[in-house]
Amino acid sequence: MPIFESKQPHAAAFKDALPFHGTGAGGASAAKQSNEHTMNIDFTIPADLYLGSDPATARAQGHRHFSTTEAAIRFAMEQAAPVSLRGALLRSGARWFSGDDIRRLYNSDMRFRRQFVPEVAALNAA
Image 1 (cartoon, helix red, strand yellow):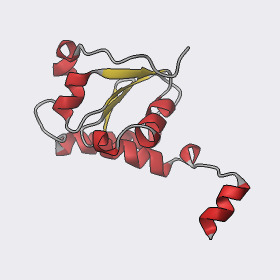
Image 2 (tube, helix red, strand yellow):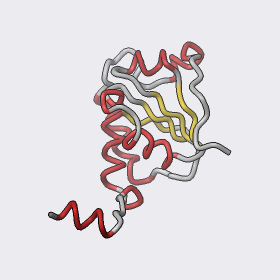
Image 3 (cartoon, one colour):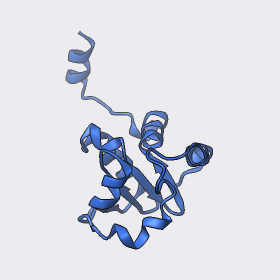
Image 4 (tube, one colour):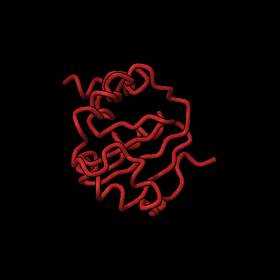
């Protein structure tokens, strides 16, 4: 099974289900709700990632489906354009996370720490 499937631009079907609909960068309550769940996230369940410069663009472009939440977060942080995290939304199970939440998850969990080859680590230290 591939890590992610192609984008599916059918945002209108689930537009009302998004907690950030109509609030620009998400509301304070939506951000607070997702912050409460960041430590209890299951990184092994499938996830949908919406990327765009703002939430409306992210919804319009559709989502990429990943076989694990970990793969979705890693893709968003390591391969996607940084500007696309501004409007990013991640759906993992029944929970939604904003671009800021994705950054926090990536930076706070040890599974995302990059391990360098000794030669590269020596070059970085110099």
